[in-house]
Length: 448
Length: 145
Image 1 (cartoon, rainbow over the protein chains, first blue to last red):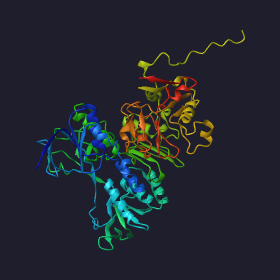
Image 2 (image 1 turned 180 degrees about the vertical axis):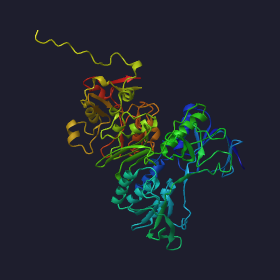
Image 3 (image 1 turned 30 degrees about the vertical axis):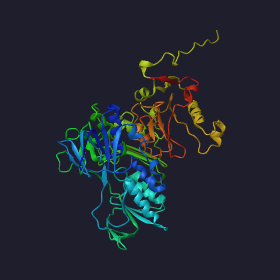
Image 4 (image 1 turned 180 degrees about the horizontal axis):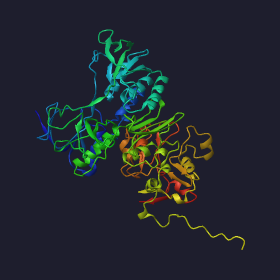
């Protein structure tokens, strides 16, 4: 028998975006009924930690994104391992796989992305994996545990997911070959210099990198077992497993065919509202405002999902809040190499100014356009990178002091006084009289 | 909540705030052992910056809408409901450095092993953070704002 549940708020998705929204809804509305639903069977866990799960067996309890009592404490009815199969935006209803329907007043789509499976032969073989969920990590772990000898893996895609999988596999003593279509790994988030640093660190760890190539098919040796892969140039690489790490695409199943405005993802305004009344979206499924490009783009990174979710939740609960925007922003720690990047790191043409400083193992670079920072990459010394990121995010004109941004000892003191003083000193209106101030020097009497 | 503010005009760049911070968080609570024998060595959770005659120390300002908490990939960073500080659970920190990239002050630091972030905790158990107590020139103030 189909049943209908009524709720004020429905959040679909139990990761960064969904949690961000649930938390902010509860800040603004302690009481309104809130249902959070996810097709994964686990309480919210930190997705990036699946690499630690695979590498060192970090258990789910130590991967939880929020404390175990989070849902209960916040009065959230959580429905895990339940799949939403249809959305009726007009009637404010969703249908679940088990026939149940949920009647909502405000809906958030935080459905995330799903890994792209390339249209090549052999992706259905045993030993072909994706790497975006805990179940993916568990499946790879189970697979590796069958072997008592060295396993060889081919990771298709040299982006972030590929690096994360490679790092974890190497820690499990797997011999990894990364196959990247473009001419260098991490090409969408790093410039050539930083990319080369990462590549060197990978090779140091015994990883083979093949660039400018793609896998044409995955070959089977025995029935349904992997024997290797064949590249486009005809080369074959022997392996027992393959990780598909080409990227993720927004999960649009629920809105496809409906009237909701989508591009590559669900298009949202600065309130994270979709084109349909009372429906919001955030995270990897949404195209939110990118402050570098000044337009909507997919920026599928964890912090943006959380922040977007937080904004969506406040608006859903009737507290107007504008999304200040996000951009591609990443911190990497693979193979002991500390690298951060944000915005446009490799300018497409000569209309940009690049300021860089490379000293030994330290690399700092900012990309400017019209006096504004539009991109940054730092490797080695990253402690004060947040200052640069925030100047970029706040659209501060840095033309008067741009050179200092890549200084070896860059810090707040490198910036004009008008920037650092308000950040550090007691706000003038409450400055207490008791605080020491500079007194006029005592008069020195000499030789009287 | 109370926060530590800088009075730049009277900071002489002596770095004692760093030393006392380090000592406060050291395993040994002994200055000589800390600098000579502790391994890994506890690092200060604040940073003295100097340029010409200007100097000041920078530490976490326990922001209200803390960007580091919002950015944290693992949930290791959260606002402590009792003290109001932005606190890190070292067990859950994986040193991914996302927090550091979001901090407008550059106030988050890497530990010596570069596998965990460290930050100012306003010295739990102390009435006044030790950097403030031990600043010889009253260049730091612990004030309710």
